[in-house]
Figure 1 (cartoon, rainbow, N blue to C red):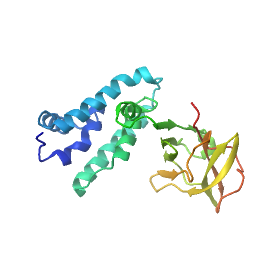
Figure 2: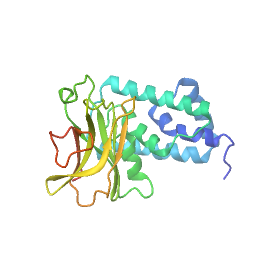
Figure 3: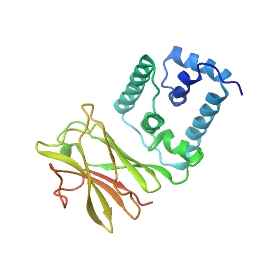
Figure 4: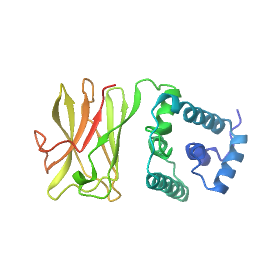
Length: 233
């Protein structure tokens, strides 16, 4: 198998190409690259197949146009920054782009790709329920999901506002209908992004919850969940 010299620089654009997020000249360049690169051709075929079967596997949801524009803009900005720095965007971020950037599917290409990818069983992307804007005291409503692989799980949130003064976000694990505290306390970045791994894993758990608690955390929730990610089928 002959792989072009520019494969490493181009391979990370497959998802954006399938989603139609590449700019005109970039799409043309990648299309030409695919014709000479069997690895990228296989990746495009896999992701295209995932997009094709997804409507049969999950309910359709309509994402706000503003969300789609924001995600595609962020993806384009990240791709340009990566090229300028000569770096490589991790696959986890590629999957996150696939998750939201499809412009309206509940789990986007991420679910379809996981269904078709080797080792897919046991790996899932779970969309979380998020409280309304009034609960966040913000005009934006966060978007949250859980990346789960077997017993391991990570909560990912975008557009997360800062916690109220004197408070921090606390992650809870629900078992037998009762929330249990974890040592996962987190705050968003200046861009509103946050990630929190679930300590000890999620085996036997029914949900992952998030509340805003006094700094240092609480032993019991002091409010209704702001984020509720059900782990049950």
